[in-house]
Image (tube, rainbow, N blue to C red):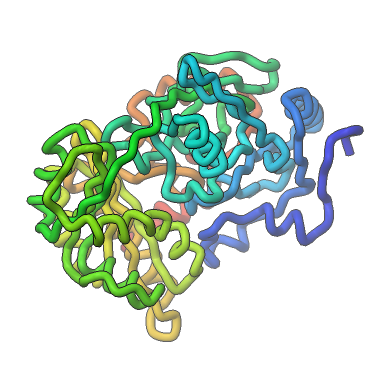
Length: 411
């Protein structure tokens, strides 16, 4: 289709690249599938694809590993999907402790290479085994290491971004991180690293209130809290044998008096949320950000649905809470599944929280998620007046946003 740029236009590949890990059946009827899946190999390829898209007024949707469940990679209007699998090169400036990476590089591949050089990522997602650099920056995620270093955007020095005007190097990271490709396509990122440090994981059986206190008691690297319902579900799904009690795990270079054996066992399974998400419709996720002072109340309210929750503590005293509700489709309707997700968000907002991300399904929440929303909206209209860069994501528009809004009102 464009000479020299790999692409796939067979129906199966187009279909597979038109979904993420959580596509609601009720909304599928409103989705188109990609017209073609491009696999750019270099920045120049991205520019050529954008040029054709602008000439033909065709939407362009960037795609990493599609490990998020917010619909950010779904080509709702069809168009070109940019699969960045082939743009996975990265290099390391060991002296400056900086990673220079293309968007398709996988976080865990990078971390293993860094460790061999005595370095480490500051933060990485719990989906690091498959999640890509461009995808996680585009979502501005929190994850492992966020207690010490915050979001991924706080650790990005600069970006190279392609749009219909060409390529630019940007240090104003807020114009792109969390914007899911709606304001430009990330082609390269410069990311701060840290020296590798041997750390240990310690487990403590404590209440949510005590967990908050302990997590922020010193300069720890990471802290996560698993409530008893979450551990019970984890044991049942993966045949684990972890004690079914509320448990805090702290990862630190300091010596602590917690259970190191249990702490290490739980820490080694920190990628569990990604595995359980991939179980499909039998598990209902809800993901929010809340002030840590309100964590105990949030967990109390959400537990009434028999949901299990995993909490990652983030600097500035906020928490990322991922809750799962086991769902038997023979007994519980899909409408109830959707209702749980909306209910979790309502509870979080009443407690001063917000959605973890927006994407397609929660684009109406962007004003709550993004502090500088109006500035970003103006920038979007300036840089993409025809709304061809990942349309209907982050900035709400179209029928799907209205449908979800109605569903939320009645939840």
